[in-house]
Image 1 (cartoon, rainbow, N blue to C red):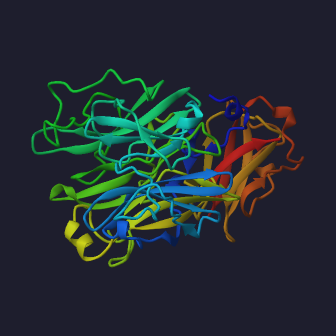
Image 2 (image 1 turned 90 degrees about the vertical axis):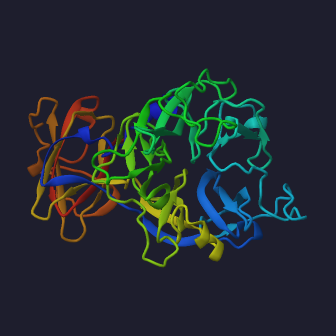
Image 3 (image 1 turned 30 degrees about the vertical axis):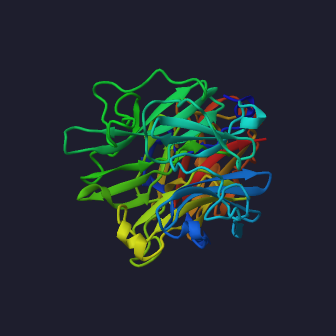
Length: 467
């Protein structure tokens, strides 16, 4: 774990259901963000078939940088670039890097492979500061760049297996390793193939992995190309018995949570197939994790649901990696499509794909919701690592919330019972809790306590102890 992250007070998000040890009249719920404006439309010749599924956003010293996928009418793919200062108005600069139909006046960066995430690699030399690990015919291969615009490809693939989705790679400071989330396939028989997500860790992106094809490998694209991933790595995310029949997971968009990288968040697009493996509709869901391995899906409510019939997000939504924190808000960017997956004719008739800005509340992915009639929750023991208790909470006008403290054995700490707590009625990301004797918890610092929440018509997103 990084020293910086470890030194920060832990944000107690409700991403790990075991935090809630007792609950009556209160339950965890996923909170979709607000879908705001369309920020990018396909208005260039190289985008006229579609803006495709995947994108990445990086926040660099106040400037937002986006890499997105597009295809022209001949279905030729490209990685394109856009940037913004306010997150709403985006420009597609003429980079002068790639010649398209006789001109370099375009925003293309020279990569035509679609299955990756652009990230800053803190362990790479300056000339390779940006990395993009993607699927090629020879396997998973790294591109690198000094500025995110001028890219070179490694001569040797990292992995001699293929994964045709937006595979996620990032440096995990907590582990001191690179983490890879890759598409794999579960093939119970010849007729049935289901997408899933596997995970692995590596110390280097330039040292080829000692994993490759075997006699069990599935050559989905023919023997002249690499086979797909099967069971070579542990599965960490897949559709299960609670999902509808004939559904699977298309992407995961997993990443450390920037406000506390000891948490991981994922935005998987869940795929309901219709007849064939490549035909159907997709919508974004939410998943949270404490370790990046065990993922929770809570009430499985759609996170970025499909739009109305006929709208620009009627049949598919995807969410790209990249969480932009601005004050009490988190901005996210994702794509929407009027056509179904696999419907090439619809895209030939009408250009498809737009990029939306979504706005989420800080820590707002999952909340503990208290019933209208009232509810109670007791948490697992947590350490008091600051003298003030702050809540991210929304009671609305008619709701209310109180907090009590117990010792690790469940005994009420004198002066900190729920009845001693001043009633909270607020919509705030930092509502301070106080009791009859005040809110100073200095005397309890370092102790393990259980928090007791009682309330009604309230949404509790997180809590934390701060100086």
